[in-house]
Image (cartoon, rainbow, N blue to C red; front, side, top):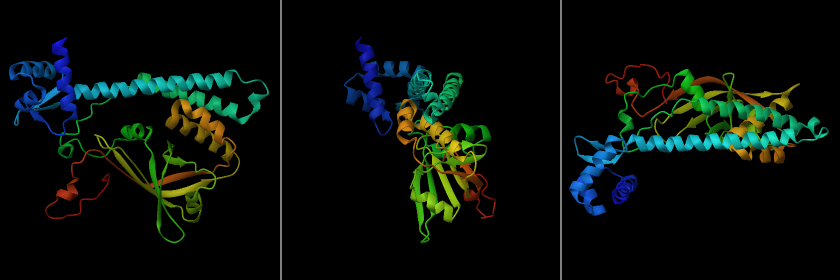
Length: 303
């Protein structure tokens, strides 16, 4: 239908535009009469697909389109988790009795249980929170502030990489992106065999971590703490368990292949015990930056 095609043209043009547009600018660009275009914009606006700034009378993509994109991401995550369960279940169920005594089979069972819990969490998850369009001035968001404990746990359960910073023997800082696991109030990291940063942590346990997202609500977590090597009875099994858990979280259906390729690697485990955690979301300034008399108001929770 021509009207549907024109509505899609409007959405696509607004999506590609770097700034909100006026009615006349859209009409000229799309070669649609202003009266017809206004009717289309009103229909799209009623559904939340387009929003108009009442002061400048400019149009931009609305939150409804953002929600559709977020739901698409969530659907793909559910599909990936389901595929991972099928692959892991096949490797566990079809294993011969002799293979069931091997480490990979036990890891498959552990990863299968984790995949089931992750799929359940996705299916029971509440609708994805609405993200503000990038064109909106998020630095004016009055809701900016530290993350609540539950929100912190949800954020750290995602698939973002952490930037780990430690100190080399020559005194220079060393930064590296790493997988991590947030459990029991600690960050668990498992370096590959021969990783340089594992040696640096052994000689100097002081470490910092940063986990952040590049889109609204712009959550970030900064950590300072000490890295404790985990050794003794049970540490190899703990290393394999963490490796399986992180592989599933970061790789989804490809986790099995990764575990099979790295199962014989000698692994270490470090527990990073936070001594200070700073969390924040949004870009609104903390009161200490707005204090006219420069009175020290503290920095708890400030990124």
